[in-house]
Image (cartoon, rainbow, N blue to C red; front, side, top):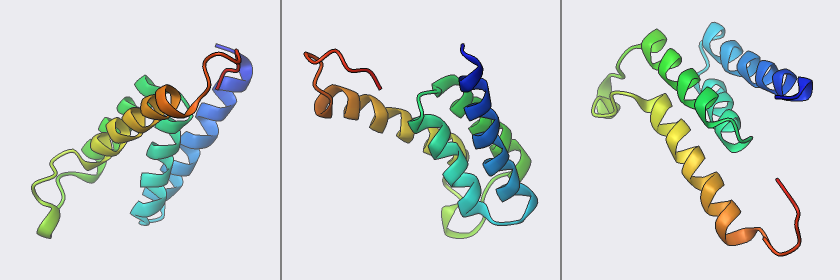
Length: 96
């Protein structure tokens, strides 16, 4: 990986960590989604699992989602792959 990749991963991780430290879960979801959409699927899943363990199982109406941050990471990965497949012109040679 390039040095810029590590910097991007660190910044996105800091966004998610800030959402955890300031009890503001939408910022944490933004960090996990950004990690997945930026093209770091393993890091996104690892971050999602880490945050799921840190936050614990949700309560209330969302109690059926046992791993919500991991689900967000997987959804982001699927959206990125679908976007690459259907919206990017593969004949031009451009890369994301």
